[in-house]
Image: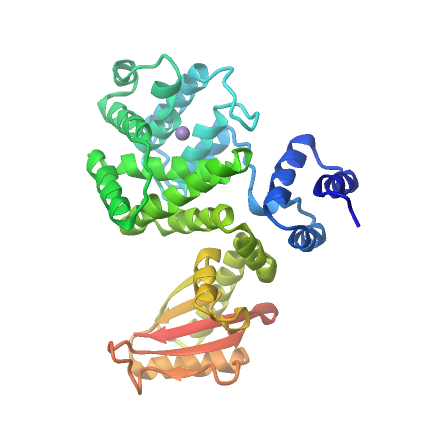
Amino acid sequence: MYKSQEELFNLLSGAFNVKLRLINKEYNYIKKIDIWNYLKINKWCKAKNLTLSEMVNDIINITIDELIEKFKKYNNNEKDIELIRRAYDYAEKKHFGQKRISGDDYILHPLNVALILTEISADAPCMAAALLHDTIEDSDATKEEIEKLFGSEVALLVDGVTKLNKINFTSDSEASAAYQRKILVGLSEDVRVIIIKLADRLHNMRTLDVMSEEKQKKKAKETLEILTPVAHRLGIYKIKSELEDLSLRYLKPDAYFDIVEKLNQKKVERDAAVSKMMDEVSSLLKEHNIPHEIKGRSKSIYSIYNKLAKGKPFSDIYDILALRVFVDTEQECYIALGLIHSKYKPVPKRFKDYIAMPKTNLYQSLHTTVFGIDGELLCVMIGI
Ligand code: MN
């Protein structure tokens, strides 16, 4: 047996030949999860040719050009692009020489915050403000100077985020959490201030492993109690569910890594599996001239955790990957079901007809679970 976790770790890291920074990151994980979980997860990582840190935490070394490429996918306005580039140049100058605790150049943080915002198609002032969001707090930049250089809209957003960051949110009860959510929303005259704050927190949560365990737990708790409910109310589910997953990872690491191991897939892979099924089901329905709309999602680790916490065994969770199909008539619901069952083998006893027998809340749809692409279980709901 190994004498200590450290000894085992040295052995493993030697075998993996990973970079020094990654080794430190992995060592942080080992301290948090028990050795057997670590070995199980590591076996899987090796099979997938990933390091542990890559699996849980994508390290993104993005440049301004790459960021602008992402922005251009939904906005090609030259003036907007110029504003973003100028904001970057200014922030880069102001943060020059500053490092994050991880050792990364500081500018990578605002770049990543802005990158997160491209995923929800944020506008140019919001992107510029994201790049500038820490300049007032961490350099000699002032609101006046930012206003002069980038206009009052950007200056108000940067100032708003700076003000929010000064508040130390801590909650010891649900009542105080609710109160602090109110403060957070009330302080932000422009909703984009909260959105930047959420993206800021998301990047900080993604890179939280360099912090002390005490700080990790505190941040994770605050995120879960104060920020995710606000993200939920704003309807920014993408940010909300990643924040929840990351919070869980620090608050209940054993439970989190246990689910990660059982899922045996990264979130991006699960999302890809769902979107592949969406395409297949959609063309199947098109072939038979059934007008439809399809939405898909893969269940977050946090919501799986909540199901397990209610006593449900993992093997009974059938909706890790799910599709929601909307058609025009009741009859088409049954036709769509027949088509789906004829192409994908249904799982026995998983079919429910809430059209013939509506739930008490009048919810009407057909539920089934099928073996999708590569035999992966997929829950399908068909309704009007
Ligand atoms: Mn920040």
